[in-house]
Image 1 (cartoon, rainbow, N blue to C red):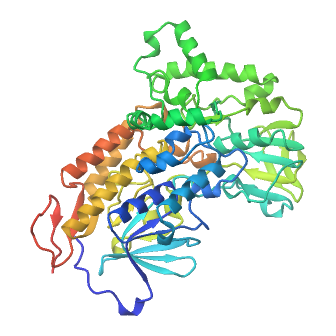
Image 2 (tube, rainbow, N blue to C red):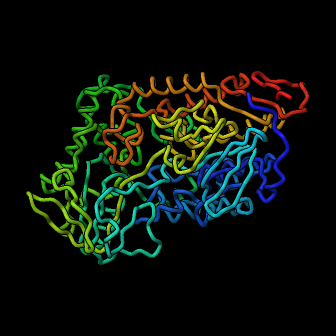
Image 3 (tube, rainbow, N blue to C red):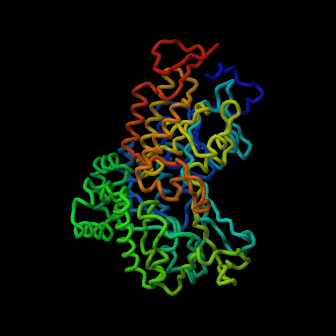
Length: 570
């Protein structure tokens, strides 16, 4: 139990007072702001960028686009919004996505409630006043009753630790930090990494650059994206089907248009199994190959091995040089055991004379020089001269956005210290010891591995209803119970263990960017699926939030007391 809050310090009247402070103006933050404002609540958004969009504001690299179908990656809260927005492609590119999010902000007059170019440096819980003091890098101070974290799962880029990186005289950038004015046409380019963003960059620039050197640390599985334009007739058909589309996503484990088949591979002949795989590979789109496969494909190691062999054969068919093809086939994990990249011509890039694949496992980087990259080769060195180095080296995923903020809770406990051996959350939305702080987009939540707008829809609507409840009941303090936190982490770990994904070294399990391959696995994401997580949140609300301690503001009456509500001590 906390102490009764006292009057605010008069010495800090310069603070910006707000009831609900949202950190992040991306897909989640925009939606959360709109929902709170609809309730007539006092809410504000802070974002480090110069405008809204979150990850879609930053990732301006060539080829950046959805791997979710465009018509599923949008808000469903407004019929007018659905009626007036047309998508141009099945998988929209970054400029179109950013335009859509900006349109939403303008359409609902949200910008006046947003502070941009405002990076949060620290958040400190004041037990004496039941408020969070939020300080920014720019020197501003906000005092908030509730803080809602919507910083994004993949918003802290990680760079490799190569010697001499600061000596390079050309342009060096992470895909996340791609300069708006960077054009690589006719240039010599090196791309480090063949994960999701690296695959997109390679396919997008292969025909534009003079020379493209792809430096691969570890191969990753990809499947054809199946992108195509959407004409007016197709757009009209899609718009008429939105209710059905959203319902399909709602009942899909990862909130995509694709869900695992009800049958196993053992229910059909090998010939039928291979025929279906071939159809999915050549005529499917998006995540169908990974999300819409036989229901044992991502759970049974032997079936997954056969599926991986099938995909490997497709790579061998598409890449002319057998040695290069084998380099592009993962050997440390099966298909779908990490995030599968959606590609459009990625493998064909290596058939071009201006494209070279280099294995950093065989020829590691010795250092970055003034003119390029020096590799260690057969006891000597090889210099690759380039004009541009692109680091497609991933992110400090899930917990990274929290770690870079100095977050101090009850009795001076630091969130980074509490999460040192792995994150712990109460139902994916709060952390014991950090009252009134909500992790809308964070570890062990339902949105971490989902089609993002569909995934965050559940937690945002839950948070909206909770905010209304807190106001109606006069609740001034809410904190996750430690025993509930332990129970949730154990449940997530137990459920995740059923899937092969939990056995891979990926950001799903705390192995960020392959930079810490030997790190201890962590329970970072919840793989139980959106429907199951939605039911868990609904149970929490229906039962009066038993996993949390809710305490009324001093002076609030006893009428309408809910389960778990406590009175503030005098």
